[in-house]
Length: 173
Image (tube, rainbow, N blue to C red; front, side, top):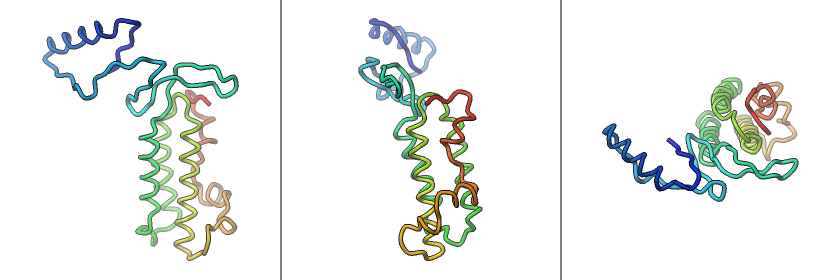
């Protein structure tokens, strides 16, 4: 859990340790630390909390965004689903698996500043799908002429998070 306080962090830490002792629970000392927000940021439940900047005005605010570790983990999962070992699968099957994975991730990570993370996931998913299609059909090069963006999104039905984001009630730009 996270304790937010103004100026009395050491007292709050002592009180939390005493409370945990009375409850006969242990505190994980490797994960427990004092963080000075907004100067520092911290990760909690897959999000990074800290100072953000408004894209239009540049004004600083305290907010949340998906952590880099969680974005990288999803990108690794997308890479695994579009690896050469799935060469015999049908494109619709691959896109269906990718869509379930991406939609589930996006349902959890729909709070805070998500645009940058969604853009990275969208780019990685479409490029990996294009690479997989080129490998499957032995197309030389990057395959941008044979498999343009519309092919993946409209014909195969790959989810595009930046379009999907508009339907999330809590998502912010």
